[in-house]
Structure formats: structure tokens, C-alpha cells
Image (cartoon, rainbow, N blue to C red; front, side):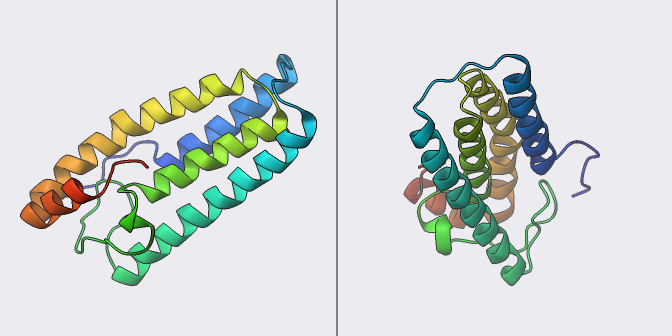
Length: 150
């Protein structure tokens, strides 16, 4: 399948991080205690990075397409894929939660929501169709066993 020219999830992640930081610079609206913002933010950021990177590494090990809508040659069901069908996207979302907490701005929650909706609509739902077409019953069984998110 030809990969369409478009923005990919990492682009949306970077744009979202820049938006959260920019919003905080323009309209600072703290919403949690500073200590919680720091500890919680770092925790979510680290967990998100580990989750996304470990899932990407599994794709690399399996020698299957990691770029959205590229050819998938193997259904990856190990590692974090035992708990969620979308650990890379979930990891990105956790990173954004971390950034939102670190800047401690409630308006950043709107960016989180927008990121989630874009990733779900532009990638997750379409990728699920592609995976069903490519892997058939194996993917149907995986989908029945493993939740989309958590």
C-alpha cells in the first residue's frame, strides 16, 4: 500500500507539545499543586517514552512497517501489545499528559483531547481496517482479546 503524504503521529505529537507550551506562555492557568505537577509530569513523560519506544522496537524486531498505512508483514502481539492494541499512540498520549502536568496548565487538556481525536480518526480507525484486511482472523482474535487503549 502506498503511504499517503501527510502529517504522521510524531508530527502531531511535536505540534501538540509546542501548542501546550505556547498556550502556557500566553495564558498560564495552573490546575494542580506544583509538586504533583513535577512528579506526575515526569512520571507520565517517562512511562510514555518507554511505552512508545518499546512498541516501536517490537515493530523493528519483527521487520514490519511502523509508518502508518505502510505494509504490515507481521501481527505484533507481544510486549505492550498484550495489554493495548495501540501502545505507540498511548505512549505519545502519556507524554502529552506529562508535558501538560509539567507546564501545569489546564488549557493543555484541550490539546490532549484534540490530539486523541486526531489520532483516533486519522490513524487508529483506518489502521484497524487495514489490519483486518491484512491479517483476517488472526487480527479479529487479537482485537477481541485486547482493548484498543487500556
